[in-house]
Image 1 (cartoon, one colour):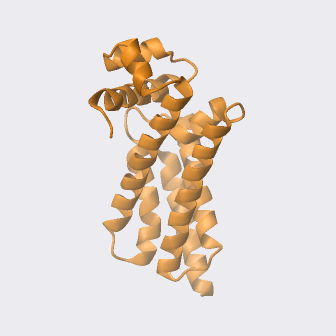
Image 2 (image 1 turned 90 degrees about the horizontal axis):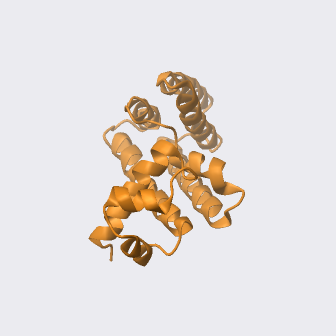
Length: 186
């Protein structure tokens, strides 16, 4: 069961890791931000690696509920495929947007941390399965899902580097082209 301290620590670490990077944030900074003792922090998380995984678990839930919420608000199966990019546009426009926390974490630590790499890969595979299911529900071909997912992934990286939300609009336009081509063939 999640304790109040555990949630405060994860929330604080998430904000710090996302804004500064994992390597730039020590456990003392997390302790201070969460307003817990170092003992309480280490009671909840035996290591920084364990805390990073907990933050990514939180981010997975945020991503999943955000994307599925945007998609489920749409009735038309083809438009549901495009709702992913509308969600991205909204997210990219947030004042604290700094890219995908999973891509950022993998870039910082993935090569040196097999557990973190597994968590990131699992998250990305879960998104791929979700997009594949949306394509199947819409009656589209199997090749469409991976292409739409790659567009979403690329848009996240591009938006973070460029510092604008334009990538979501461009990715959505490319997705429209792909969706139209897929259904024209079907």
